[in-house]
Image 1 (cartoon, rainbow, N blue to C red):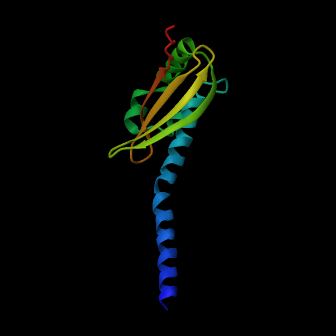
Image 2: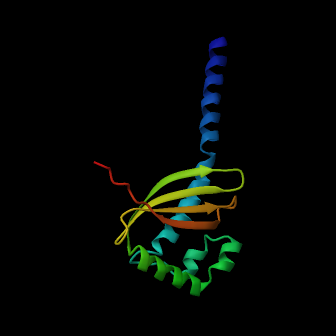
Image 3: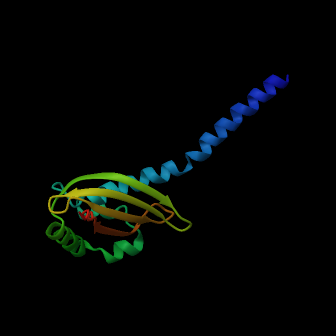
Length: 139
């Protein structure tokens, strides 16, 4: 009898720990989907304004209208070039927001960090594109 009780306890412990550790997975999947649509806006097959803003929070949506979106695409193209590749880098969960970071490669800048902040409703609230420059070794 003790063996069965011990086995059942082990099974329920493993099931609960698997369920608890996967809690962030759904949020991350939603945020990555919105992030990928946003990042693709800077590539050759740019997303339409309405597609990109589906993942925006209300405050960001009011700041980034169709004209600002077009200007943003133009500024990124002038400064970084066309998006060539992007890869997921990190996910950080904070009390009031989540931060998703991608590392991207553009035609003019080889490494660019794209950091996006999401609220608890998985809506994009802020973003930043920052070039990454490697320091040259001194001889």
